[in-house]
Image (spheres, one colour):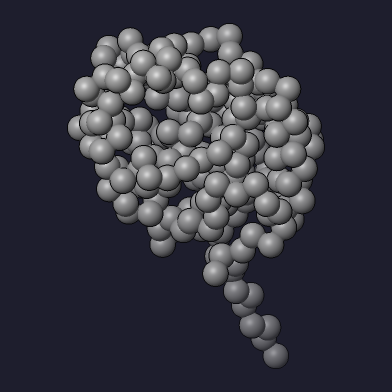
Length: 219
């Protein structure tokens, strides 16, 4: 009797992306640091990064790659995660913070007094930072980066360490929410936002969580 031909397994079509915001720095909540170099994690931020590493290490199967923006605070957040996963940190410029241009390094208390601040909060899709990037450009750049990274790791899970605004923008694009609504989202230091990217589109599994990730599954 002739044997039946074996069915070929379909190639994987999804990637789980764990978006991690960097830990707290000495200027978190008071300064708009942007892409200025030399800003490191505080002691609290280092502890947050260790906690995030422990939570991510519990995921089964474990992530197969970890990427981070080039800035010190993201690299320092990624380091303990990479150590826990026995991986090396790969640098991805597409995960960078928004380019705040001439607003870089300014005190938030002073920026809130500017007439443009209302536009930043209520209509960010129409705003470009002086001599910097627009929110729309940041959203397109960061989301395209995540899609490209996911395509390299189909059937796997990966970690991407970035910044609050890019992660909020990625979530907005993935959820089909207008960019003008993205300021309503909150992304806490070292929180994890889980995004499943597949051929059927993006699926948001969790956002801004600092809880266990062991039960993370698509519904």
